[in-house]
Image (cartoon, rainbow, N blue to C red):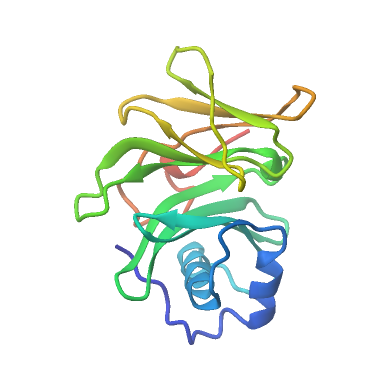
Length: 206
């Protein structure tokens, strides 16, 4: 479990949260949990609130707790995607840290491996997939198998089964069948001491 900075931290003001919610999909988060998620991302990435664009891409639930996919982007820099879940009672877990090239980041599907909600944090063999806003469908290609279409809900999110030891690639398509973007499913991050992008598990190169 990882706990964010105090919700009283001056990093996050109300205006930043309002801007972050624009275009968000899924079950709305309350201000307290959204603030905690945003503060966690800013502190972890060592980015200031001023000049950093924060976007809530999706929110829902994980293990019965609030969950979110959000991105932070400093002016002129790359996009860092964070997936988190938790609450003020049990604490918060960071499920994904991934540095993406800024170009085309909005068109990429993003996924992360769901881990057990215990001290082991063992991968469960399932992954959550979030489609980009313009996607009509998303496929997952596991290893050398043929691509399989991901069943998406109204928030453009889905769950797929992917063995923990198998690599996978997500591909998003527009309504006319063109590829919007592709993203490998990152492996589970083992060493979380560095910044996002410091290890192959936390960065995606063009």
